[in-house]
Length: 262
Image: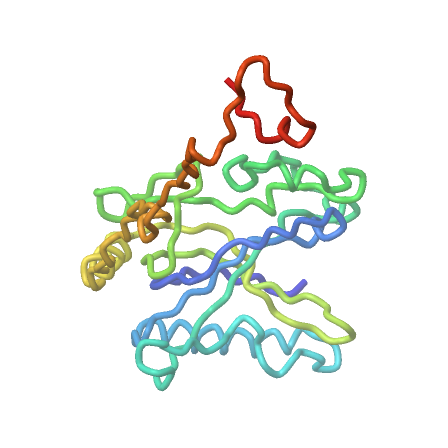
């Protein structure tokens, strides 16, 4: 069996969790984290030691089929400097589930509800995949006492830029006819999150104050104010033009139309 090395790395975190929604992809869901030292010499030494251990695995792979470049080492570009400064980064991950055929000798444990509050991971086919103690990732918060960590049941809210320490195992695995080496995530310790909180507060205070324009007031106007209303004048009837009717006088047929009404 290939040797299994365990190392501790420390410094800035900018990774997260991967939670696919489709049930057929749940079996391959994993937790992952990527850390970088942002130019720290001690972190650069850790990366060099990981490269040295990576070459040692070539002695245990048949016909030297180990991939020439480790996939857990990458480059992080500082966006604040226009991407001109690059720093080495390490990525460690852990799958949530193990095939039930490969889970012999491991105890089956329940998934931390803080990692799966909606119960999505519970939809996996339990007849083929199980969550064992080897899939667990421990979450810790450093206490005020030096070199002492406190394990927490709830996963700490990790943000990009937090100072963390991770523990990972280096393991060689077959991959498409060749062999690769992965960093298996075992635990995460939140060392200091004050820098991230201070940076968020500084960005909020430094933001320019947005001056909103005065609200437009809707003033009602009479749509008929520009017009002068005129009353229709009733025509006046001149009594002299109306023929008068005298008693005992016979009216002709044409006079009935001109007779005034009382």
